[in-house]
Image 1 (cartoon, one colour):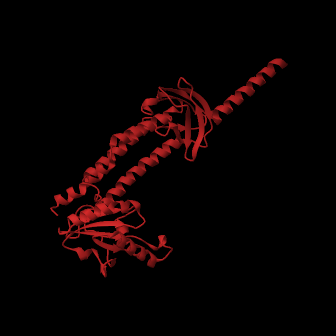
Image 2: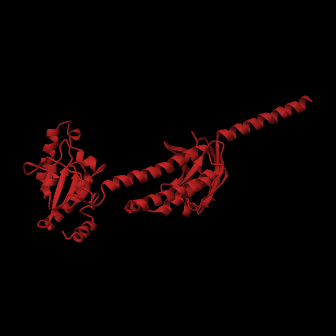
Image 3: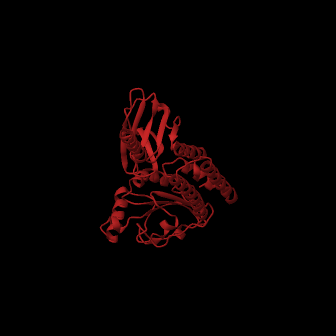
Length: 342
């Protein structure tokens, strides 16, 4: 009887240890056909959390402990990456072809439904294509399209059973954020749509003397370049802009460059910022109309300019032709000019 009790106690200990291990760690296994890599890295939001060796036949098996239930990256190289949802206690198998990374992957085991759902979401996103096309729609058609997209994402979410609550909350939030982004961006674009009155700037310092405002160029098309002397991509566009200004010099268009050089990048001095701008214009022999916005950021804010260079085309009546016009180096710009018979 004593022997039996001892044996039972031993089995209980083994079972308890096994159960504790299974809930504290993720078991990850599988096989990658046509694999040429030697390791798998599991990456979290802060970097690599586990490195797993791949056998010669492409198989792998290991355990890892994740800090929280979340979407992680399963990676064998920088160009071979796939999402996997991990939570301690999951036992997941991933099988697929290393030459068709992610698209060929089959997730199985406890917790695999979460990764399958993520793949389905990604496939849906890919099928949507370039979201910019939605912003070209009329208002009624736009809202109809976005509503249909949201319903399709919600349908994918509801079609998967046993999803982890963390992923459900994350997906629900992301779906809503997507809809909010589309709605907010559409409203902003409507304000800056073709034909809408352009926001104005007033009293900007002219390199050649005096001050200029947008109304100074009424009656002509205005191609505006918002730039700064410290901006590399802005400087790259200068030769193209010079060539363009020369070609259209006697046409019904003004080329206006607005420098946004400010005190923060010049030791806190606005005087130094203006001096740097003037020196740059002189040394680079910049053509067209060269203006400095100084302390006035209202024009940039109205156009919600978060990155430069930014090019804007305004018609002779002061209305927007294109709030985000092609760059001087882009052949589409001359096509646009020609369509307007400039």
